[in-house]
Length: 330
Image (tube, rainbow, N blue to C red; front, side, top):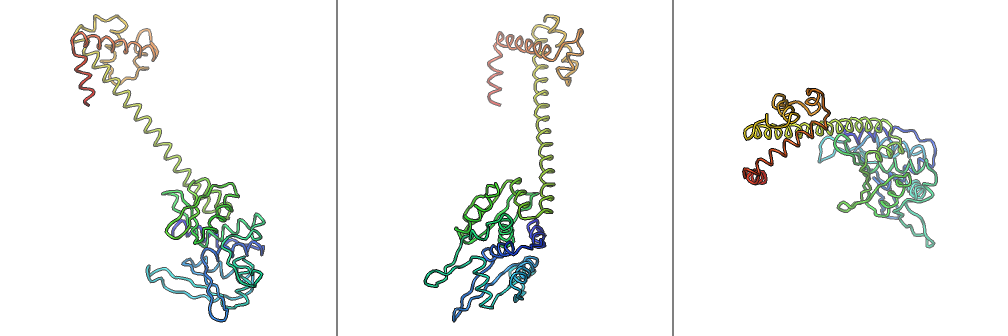
């Protein structure tokens, strides 16, 4: 089962006692996964379609609690996947249907008694903070999805209406989040991509188990990334140390061939011999081998002087430009 499905199953088990919150959640479910069918003689029915059994039970339970009706439920095999069931719930009673659509703000009558579909979120449904949380929860159950946090952080709501997408985004952002909207084919997608914001949203809608799971994954990924950064940094520093040591040895060997190490000053000759004898030692370790000991900066200063002498000898012998040219080619 996917991380998204587990989250929806958890949300479907949340008990909602206040009727205002129940209606807010049902309103979101109708807008996200419901459809309105109008037939002859003005008969109107509402249909819900979902592949998640927990969400089907959730819708059935909400309708029972609010309107005390038993909704017709049909179960069909998904022809494409040939393994998942498709749950279809239908409200056929015209009196109940009109009551549901009016209560959830799906449509309202105008002065001429015509019905106007409201694609946005009615303000009266989200006056209270608890109702706002319930609406977002219903929107996620009806048309939301959450990517596996092991791979990426991405939570989204897919809706058919631009008006509903804008209202839903504003509703989410009223909790100090930063959701955005993008079009995908003929749909509008409200999404969050930051792990911390997704955690906050899961807390808002009550998915606490999913929240803890995501937080654990975030911590592990952060630790893993920090370890990788440290290892990469150490590797880079080690490479720099090795390259510097090789360059120093090459300079010392060149000086020895051309003029002899013994012709250097005592301080430079001592560090030169130690470097040749201890090729893998760090500057600090080389300094501790000297008598008296010399600090890291002192050792570095002497090795730089040796490099300057080697470069000067190469220039005098006409070898410096050739070495520089070969280095540029590499």
